[in-house]
Length: 103
Image 1 (cartoon, helix red, strand yellow):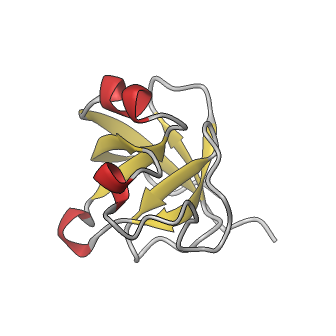
Image 2 (tube, helix red, strand yellow; image 1 turned 135 degrees about the vertical axis):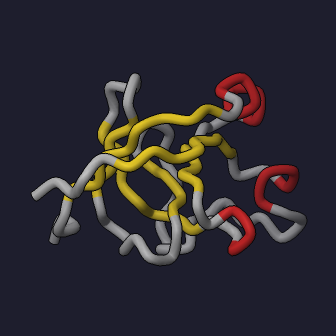
């Protein structure tokens, strides 16, 4: 079932050291390789595997990564390149979470 729609700050990241820090290893916190159009990082309160829709985007994303605690109220969409992530920028959008996570 879908949870209520939330409004959140939506940002973008890639697997580079600028976005993920000097120890960036190209893996998500859930242990899978991130995929553009699929992977998002979300708050620790949102379980891995939850599906997420972002208003204005056609993809259904899957929570596969975590945000740093200081940015925990955001949703961060994975992009394969730093340039594309930077181009996406920072927006405020409605988010719909689908529960439960897929098996």
